Length: 495
Ligand code: NAP
Ligand code: MG
Image (cartoon, rainbow, N blue to C red; front, side, top):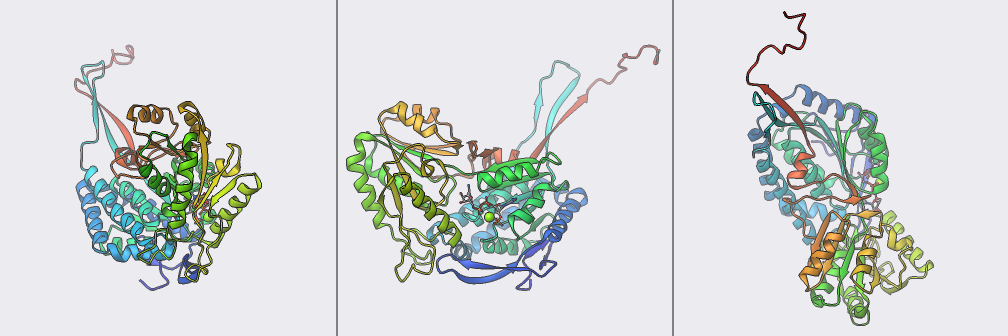
């Protein structure tokens, strides 16, 4: 691969047809790391045609499941062998602390293994239909050409969440990373290229969302679009996908409540309240961005929360001491700062944070203090909208019913946490929350084995687990006549 060829199409590294490139930045310093190819609409057409041809007549969908699994197991091995280097690329490009990037890379490798294993397990069913002479069954088949558009907050892990089930199922895939964070995906495709996946089975397309991404969503040659990102873009993708009634799965935003009852283990609740919002700098779809605190705790818990937030070590993710990194871009920093201004303008008060960090280590990057708002009202923009930064809003509640009602007062329904030492109450509350991913006395653990996705405007469909594979498979019904004999329906014709 030449240093300017970062589009992987039909098994070959290519530059953009028009030679366009894009600068890629390190968010800790805002220095340019490198230039990468920037695809145009004609590169996108090329990628779509490669995937279409590969699906319609190439080997990938026609390999046995065991053969496809072998490729994916080998890919998992290569990821593991390169894990530290991949984590460093991820940290430089996304800003996330190295310890988080290491988790992501390990999870990504495990995701390829999980789906490589799952695809060889039993998948069809037979049905007891009311005709003794018919054997009715289902088989699963790939959907076809799948376009997969991913965001900048988990560039490597999201690539795995999309490609592992998509490829295991026998689809031919086109991955479009976010324009800001393509570097770990390029490394992943270097490994894919080493393994000689059949040409066209999997393409890497780097380019902007509104052009390249939109064409993927619109193209009649693409059968499915899988997207993770903002609800606004999800809506636009859904609209673009109507032309050929594409299959659509969407993993969108959230404003997830983390509910702490007075009877919780308060040390545990405190640490998780911080982790829920400040992991990934708050740029996490499931971030526990609303802390719902039982009112009797306010006086003791909030000062401890503020003090602990001030102790979080913010800095360059490459520094082993760093606990929270920079936001992805100056633009994202501006968006988050605008939310802080809006919170203040609407009458909320800062418990801590709110400022950009200007220490010598941080002044060039997009660093913001861990920020917490109190005296909030459910109508405020900072309570209703996804900020996608290290900004927590505290909402006080009086009793269980009010906790549930505040928690559900959102257009989103992605995740929710509950902290209480009364497990019965915890379960009772979780069951009433309109959210797809819930945690009791923990926050954020995510498993390849269990389904992931949201209620309400947080998305459509589920990734991960067996549901994540189903999302890349069609279901075919097969009926076999065990006793063929004349039907006798058209008596005159066949007498
Ligand atoms: P975004 O617009 O949703 O971007 C996510 C992905 O979609 C990127 O690959 C993007 O490409 C692509 N895209 C953008 N517009 C598109 C279009 N019209 N058609 C097809 N694909 C398109 O997110 P963003 O602009 O990077 O961030 C904006 C906000 O989104 C954040 O503040 C945050 O609230 C939210 N967000 C949520 C998640 C999540 O996991 N829920 C993740 C990221 C962002 P480009 O990179 O080229 O724009
Ligand atoms: Mg964008």
